[in-house]
Length: 456
Image (cartoon, rainbow, N blue to C red; front, side, top):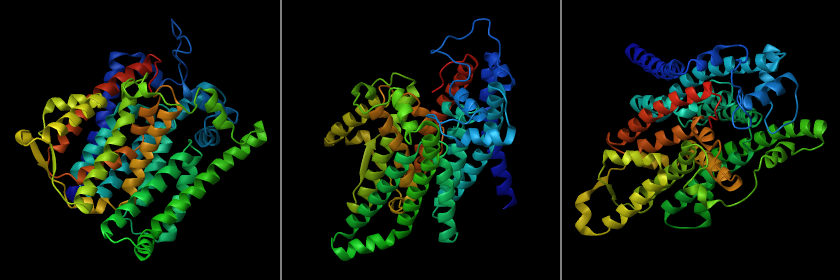
């Protein structure tokens, strides 16, 4: 037991050291990054950046203004409220520096917490290590240390994941109380109302549908059995609905008193250009960072694979064949539309017996049976999918989608549960490749940060 604890500590130190190393390399390549990150005042530029293409603080400036003078904006109040009540900043520079300090502290706390939570949930130390490393080294991880809400939201999200763990042995009422408090705070940190409603409803409906399909006989009695089996998950979902509604109502009431508009944050976002629309070109060209395109596709791919695995393992058992693994295919992950085209083409080819030699039987473990009724997994994957859908249908470009998906832990938790369903070590090759590319991207992000460029 003592040896295992030492191994866990060493793994955590490796994860944190890897992030620090990427930051150090970025600062070494572009020294202004070092001074910007550690300086308590804004650097004086010989050639000041020109708005709107570049900005020194970007969104942090809006939060800093709210920390000094509370106001109703598109941004939510909890993050600046914490800084205002603890540090009492008087200037934008002071507030921005305090945001950075607290964010960096939360970064390390949430990383340790997530490792502990995933180790309990996945019950695989090796898998936990690689997932947390991928989470910590992805290019969007920089948002968890430079003062954005991602640091606070990621910490709250990790606590929510912990409360939802099937292995957690706590009194049901205590769990529901924790869930209420955590989701209330999340709703005051950033807009999650639609995401929470979508992910909880979709998770319940998915588990319930899979349960009915397994029974083979459809009747009102079986319907009631299914409802009774998931009554705790229903209580959890209703608790989240109430707390997120209350969370927004608190901020909405403040907006009503100060601006006369209960829905002012939504109207402000509409003024940024957000509106319902269909921009099919975004399926190929994100008009923003490439990682935003990954944020659009990867949650949907994981959702699709999980449904396929569960269906062919529980509902209609049969073998699943996949193309033989080739390392060069990992490159296509960086541009998912090509990856999908490749697999669709391979599927068509594999329908012919003469090409069976070019495929292998994918070994799906019995863990898939557990996955089918795992509320936490379905909630996590639908929560990330909700962000992808909302951004795709409300923006003319995929700005910030990568940050919403990869800077918080839900996507990586869902990925971990999916990995538990696949037998063998080949599955890790893709993860190792992504970690390697992500580390390079993280270094570039630190350089971009020093140059005041858009980070995502």
